[in-house]
Image 1 (cartoon, rainbow, N blue to C red):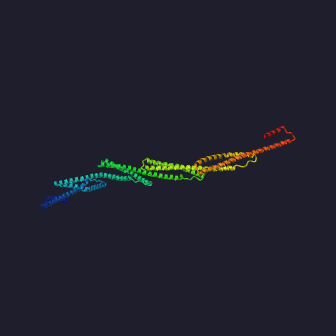
Image 2: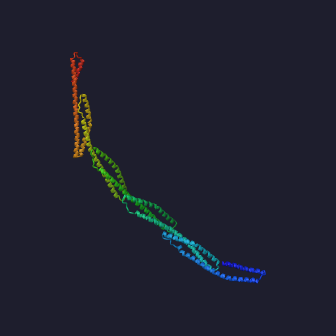
Image 3: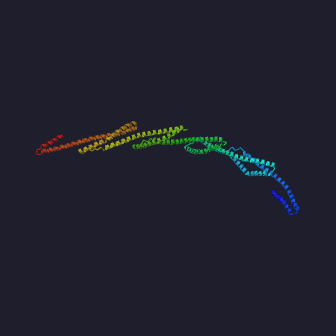
Length: 533
């Protein structure tokens, strides 16, 4: 500013000389003009020396100030250079993230300091341009070069550190994710390796459902492991400095996951084994309870009060035996098949299952034997009561037939012959009774060989009653047949006597007749007499 004013005034002083020459040519007082001009020039020259001196002082001050600014900038860069060239890249994700933030902060500081450095570079260039002192200019030039070198270095180093930290971040992020995956899988392994066993079917179902959820979680976790594998392959393909270590870590993760799946399948097998064991146990218990309930019926000692009662019992038990055989055999076969499957699959409780199976089959065999025994007992009771029933029925029929045997012998020959035909039909009709009586006798013989004591006596008594009634009926039939024959003979005799009396009356009438009998008529009468005799 001041130098510009001086330059303007210098031009004015120079113009004064030109004006003085013009005035001298015009004939003005040149001495006075030259005196005034010289006074002005002298004063102006006296002013230039202090100005030059002040300029030198200002230039020196500016150089000192510029050197300080350069030194400050250099110190600022040198102070931050250790951060830029640091080889500390962190040993975990949190540390790396912190270092990245610090490096980003440093880069922002450098960006914020860039205008100041640019100003220093620009002013240094201006100083070098205006300063004719070669010695001081060389110093400024050297310091400027040093500052430029440091500035370029810190820019480069922060950029390189950013790249290294990014690589470290990728690696630590992978290690962090891998560690989380390993921790999760290790936690699942602890569950999979648990020796806890269900105490009943309900808890077994609950544990199986819980395992199914975890098993699905393990299955879904395959995506996480796959992503880790992709990250590992990507870092290896990008020639990451820790590619080898990352590859080894991924192998561990893959191996751990494969082992976890194996443990999951093994645990599932054990839980399923346990569940099927309780399921079999429930089936066995239910079936044994069912068999026990059937044994109560099959073990009944009720034999029936009479033929109708025992018939009803036998029919009901026959239906019971059929249903029990069909349903029970199917259920026993199903349980046996389930037990065999568990045993053949190598179930850890195969010995217990075999005991359950043997016990069930033994109970089933006992029930079938009990049913067979009950069937035989009812059959025997049925035969006995049927014998009593048949004996009573046959006896009643015999007595009924005996009652129906008429005492009437006929009033004449025709009625006798009719009664004889009726008696013949009656005798033919009771032949069926005879067959029944003989069958009853055979049954009595067979039953007497099967029973002893009072029952044998009772059987013999019932048989005797029937045989006695049958014998009486037969005797009555024989007697009536004889009486009918005698009555028939009697009426035939009466008929012959009547015919003879009529003939004799006819003969007497002929004898007493006046007219001589004809020869032909006499011959007929004689022939009739011969036939009667």
